[in-house]
Length: 163
Image 1 (cartoon, rainbow, N blue to C red):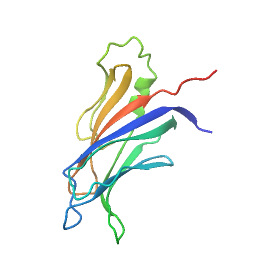
Image 2: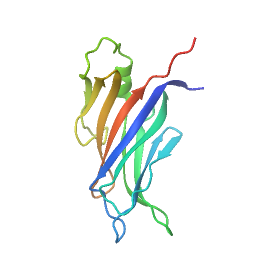
Image 3: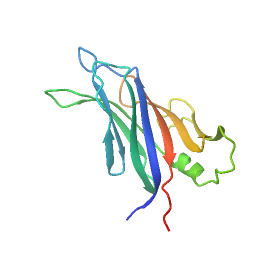
Image 4: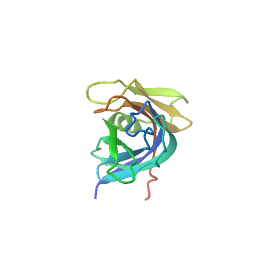
């Protein structure tokens, strides 16, 4: 049994400037994978700038797997078209989780992840302690596609310890 250390709430906010795969645009949805967990958002009809605002929850175990995102265009009669993918690590977030956060001031910037060749970040990704909750805002640039970004907000959820 893997050692589950907490839950990660992934709020899928929106897609920006996604590629058009059909004459009517695209009907995008997002597949979020971490290890053997797979979750997906709803399909947004004919929209290359979809607003999802949906929460997906993953259980996090150590060692931590990277999170993979894949965007697809929902097709009725053929296989869904790929609209790009991205991958990122939540290790920086997990490192902050292990710190003693109780005494931290509200709104404190705990850490920041910079875009690099190791991740798909479009911009710097701040990890903030606010209202007793650790959050990370993430904007990912999609790979293997002409254009597109996905905006997420990650939120750490501690699992209560039982005696």
